[in-house]
Image 1 (tube, rainbow, N blue to C red):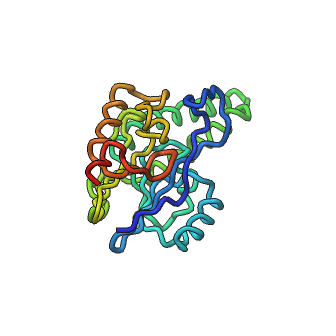
Image 2 (image 1 turned 90 degrees about the vertical axis):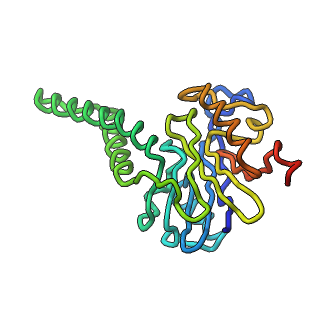
Image 3 (image 1 turned 60 degrees about the vertical axis):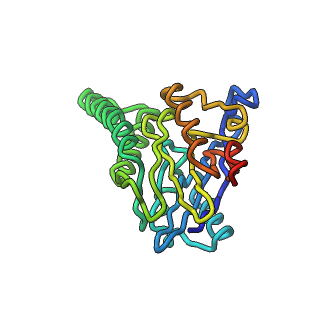
Length: 240
């Protein structure tokens, strides 16, 4: 098994740095896992052109070489370049797919009804409403293409549920020859969050997020963080 960080992510707003407003464009850490015939890309958060260049620079691969794309969550910052990988299987946890899909479908239905009501009244949607309708339609199309990931995507690559930041957030547990590595997604965002034992303030459920944070530390020798690099688990150093 070969595991590479393709691009280190970043938070748009980092409260640990005393930021209260967006200071940069947020994007997820993108990781490539190759095992057997599978080339699994996790959280393609950069814009397509940038991620295509990173794949070439880091591992000399083209988008067509990727067999699977796994999303730790359906956050837009985890999937900006997803549509570039049109030959790959798109995967995310079943719970994430279901919990995101229901409100998204409701939003689409509401916006479509608004558009129809306005047409019947001889009026048109505002530019903001049209933009929102386009965004929701695109997101619904993307989610419809995504499949519920099996418990094991490839030999040694298993789902590891990490609910809390989102209801269905899910990492990947990698059984490598000399260590166990966990791709955490935003369950552990950065090294500062790891060192201070903090979860993101935008959690769906803070208590569950803290539990997932601790479970990640208990299971893995190495951690690939949602907006940072690959790090040795500080609680596992004595056993490495």
